Amino acid sequence: EKFDKYWSPGEDNAHISLEKFFKSSLSNYKEVRDIPSVSGTSKLSPHLRFGEITTNQIINHFKFHDNHALSKHEEHFIKELYWREFSYYILFHFPYVIDKPFNKKYENFEWEVNYKDNLENWKKGNTGIRIVDAAMNELLETGWMHNRVRMVVGSFLVKHLRINWTEGEKHFRNCLLDFNKANNVAQWQWVAGCGADAAPYFRIFNPILQGEKFDKEGLYVKKWVPELEKVPSKFVHKPWEMEIKYQQAIKTIIGKDYPQPIVIHEKARASALEAFQSLKKN
Image 1 (cartoon, rainbow, N blue to C red):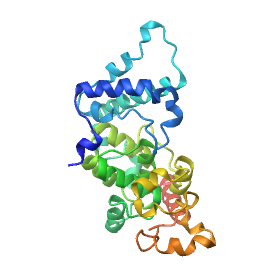
Image 2 (image 1 turned 30 degrees about the vertical axis):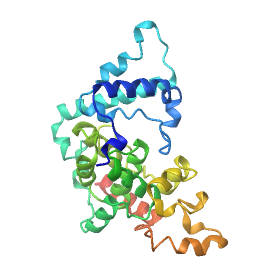
Image 3 (image 1 turned 60 degrees about the vertical axis):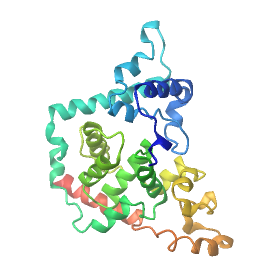
Image 4 (image 1 turned 90 degrees about the vertical axis):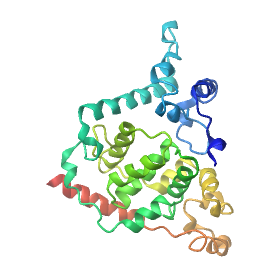
């Protein structure tokens, strides 16, 4: 019922979106693409997924044959298209990655066994971690999620909650409008540290710092977690540091209208590092 509010499908609209992106966000893409509260990405991924536009058509739009020197922003965007193609290459040549790690030593990683409650809290945006819940709410509402927070929610599921990346891959498969097997698997294995081109196991996103860095004013969180709308921006990501004069106000929100964090970052990080280092030794 909400589809028309967010999306305009079709080949014509795909090319309209491409033109709009070239005239607006591409000129400062490398910086603005990481800010989830602004429209800094192309949002062409659903059009690509349904074949309404192709990577060749997008790349040809850069007019290489006119001796056009690429800016750093244009080059960065094209690299991401290449990464998309690389994901298909990996899936074609190593089909087992669809449900198993590309790096086979991670097949022996000990994931949490009793994780159903935490998985449901993650899916429903009830983790108590502001940037994570905002991203999951955006996904449920629109069928899409900003790329920066895709990495944050993925890292949180795999490394803070120690839930197998396949659970996250399955949920995204069911919810993302731009889902395709190759990209979805590659992205999840990247964040889990077990893919062909993966983040190292010790890279664990701090979701609080990620929120403060890329959503400094809390605009993204306040949009998708309206329960926090009245919280002063400087405390959106860390309400427990609320100044004395605000403490009474925050008590009516956190823990009542909005949950407490289901894990403490420092403890979850230490536990994840211990598990990954143990695997490394073996």
